[in-house]
Amino acid sequence: MVAVVTGASRGLGAVLAASFLARGMSVATCARTRPDAPDAASVHSTMTDDDRWMASSVDVTDAVGLDQFAASVVERFGRIDVWVSNAGVIAPIGPLVAADPEALRAHVATNVLGVMHGAAAFARHVRRRPGGGVLVTVSSGAATSAYEGWGPYCASKAAAEMLTEVVGLEEAEHGLIAYSVSPGVLDTEMQAEIRSASIKAFPAVDRFHRIHAEGNWTDMEWVAECIVTQCIDPATRDLPVAGSGSVRFRVPDRPDPR
Image (tube, rainbow, N blue to C red; front, top):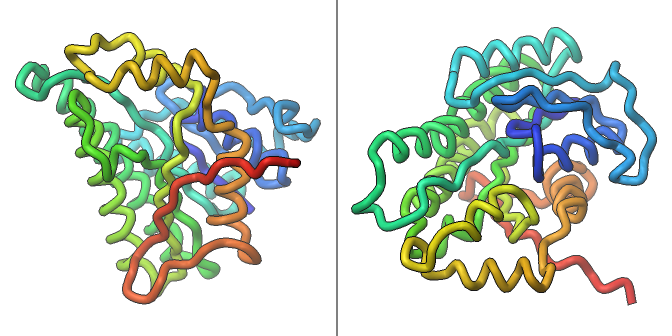
């Protein structure tokens, strides 16, 4: 099985790449900064065979570049079975009336057009060969809950979820199954950026300071495990209900081992 992960130079994308590699998949990663080799040891595996891993410097806002990246993955591994649209940004934070128009454009280009370009490139590939495929869009609770100061982020995540739904409907006959996954609050650089916002710009910032102080994060390896079991593994994955183009779910709390 071959998986693509965008935005894989750090955070959840890097953990997903390592987790997929550790599970025996071939993995192709991309980000604006070329991702380092996944740390498979972080997911309790020593499998780091370069024959199963590749990385490229690609900006998801560049449709042509993303198409070329997809073609290079197919040339290297023969096919793509899973496409994870993980690349995303949070800025600008603050009231929409004060937002810089160029910052808004850049935000939408990454969080919306980037998902569109990736989904289109993957769908074109799936149509050209048998066997279907799995499209995973990393979403957020902000897609369905409004936060003051997060107008662009809430809007872009809602747009990405609806896009994923539409692609799932359009490509169902070709065997593409679509998922929107809300991973919870993760200990990433994006969270540090959120905590740096003033309460005037983002009134809910105290909640994120509290999560940081308590270390009450969603474990990223657990997110990876849920994506594998609920989206990728044919034996356990959820399927869209009749009339729906995608499966939308929030990663649940990790079960207490006790």
